[in-house]
Image (cartoon, rainbow over all chains, first blue to last red; front, side):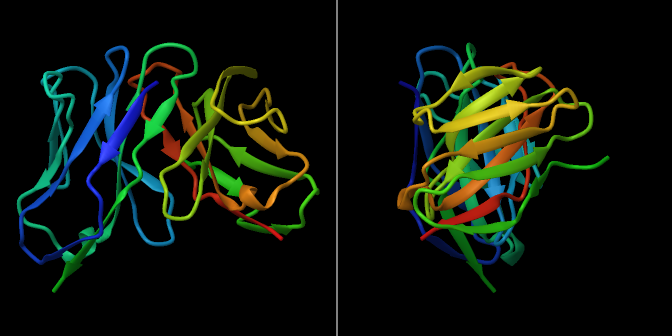
Length: 113
Length: 114
């Protein structure tokens, strides 16, 4: 079945540091890939997405590129801020019955001033 | 534009009881999905409804059931509650059911089973 693997957290960085959160997936078809973010006490918000190979999603300084050859969708940001502290979830959605979003376990990011 | 809303925000039940959770989808969205998020884990797909019909189901037992109404709002019903059902239940709506569609999440209902 489909699955998503993320790097284990927590990740602690200083403000203005470079961020990478690794995400790899297993899917039978050609899924769409997403990054969602969950701030403390809030629901999940879409951060970015990519629907086909080599697409780059970007938002709020975050980027991720859909790499079919390595089945990866790593999240990057050049300079993190304290306000980026949250839990980040990588997810896939496969074509077919039920859309069937599959989420990774999440990576908690803490950014220190 | 009103986002996805869920009620109640918190709920405490005892083992064996039944619970109904409610979700109002975002305006213009005809597809609703439900997820269970245990503490410290990613959301797990329960099922999806598209235009009042179940459109896919994850690995959850039949005591988890749902409904979607003509206005596309939805209910999640859980019978014979077990301690392991304690979790955050998330509802998400989307404009359609395609794989590339973005799902918009509500704030969730936190259920505690004692």
